[in-house]
Length: 406
Image (cartoon, rainbow, N blue to C red; front, side, top):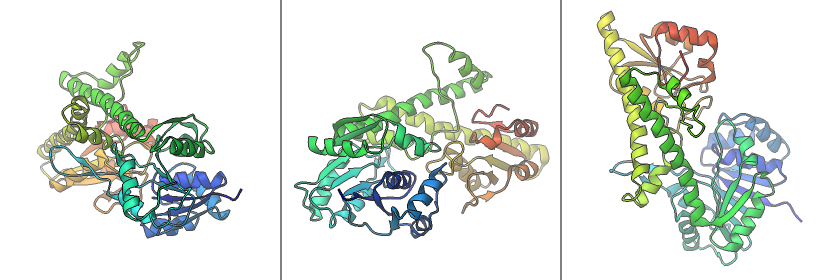
């Protein structure tokens, strides 16, 4: 049997690792991205994002001739859509934005042929796979024997190459035959269990997973607010409470970021706001935590102004949405730094995982502590938890919003 060709649309944090993994598992992979820099970088055997081990996978796949990137979709046997699904800003409840998914569907419509598999991996509101099918038909694709299914990613940035293989996957087709065929495709490169269902259940499953995590983080963030007001160390409190055999409180932070947890719960709320009360409240609690952090930093800055008689400077330590990655999507730390700067405060930032930022001045940690009056730990990067660094942070009086433990 000839080698199957897979077209991966979207070569970002999910699409590129998936493309590289498929290429190392014997598939001929054509990747598609609208970003010319990403296309050129990948075709040189390099990567445009930070993810452990990904560079080796991509380099090997490109050198072997198994992976090539393009600016437009290419003919294939299997199409995988891995594009962003943000939400529309404004209004009381943010609304899902599936424009990129629908554009990707239109982009492959002229290429889709009988026997093809079309898979949506992008986190999407319930009904998106069916809507994608309708868009393909409207664009002229013959779907009489084309098999469409939804299979959401379930990976943790920093461990993507491992979790793409090891984690269980949920596959939901628009037909039982689509579910079976797409599940069998995933079983060729996934060692975890591939669980079969229908498209709507698979779509809701992904949203439920991230909403569950958001609710749990909201509890931790709310406890941090209550403990601060009561003069209690929330990190120690959680450590003690978690010694209970049936308690597992998560760690509070400066909010919740990333493209999944900070976004996906709104997809549920937007569909049924009357009944999604807990999920909505959790989103509001986590968003409020970010605003609370901003207020605490401003109080410290005002105190520094009174103390020194000059305009103080704040160092925001960490910009990514979680430790040890370069991903700034929906990052509360980035939001905090930009908000403070927009409000007229003098801001410098330390982010070890990126080399530059269009709006913020990046400096190293030593310089940040030397030139700043207030330091705010916003992301628990590994560079900040080294014993010698923690001593310096403690001596500087840094504000710890992420549990570095100074």
